[in-house]
Image (cartoon, rainbow, N blue to C red; front, top):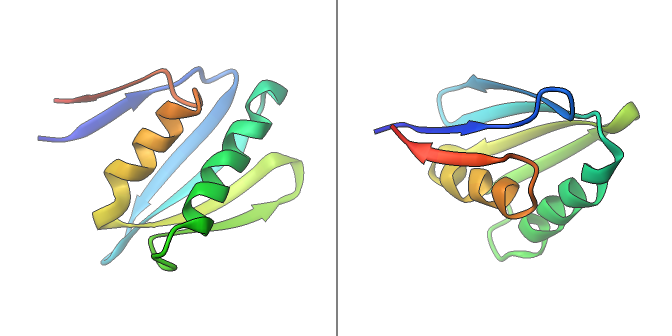
Length: 92
């Protein structure tokens, strides 16, 4: 089974790249209403006890590069859902 998700493409742009051990996300926050949500996701993973689960790199214009260990992929997607950055996640 694969976890898929949907989001409003006029509010965010998300791309994923699979590497040997991680999934690298490029996320652009296009809607101001989501600025606090991505910061909440970042804070959640920075404050947990696992330092290498999800790493955030912030760039200009609300652009983020996020490196997610494969074993934390579901947790990361669900945290995006919890903050309403994505609108749905489902197993297919």
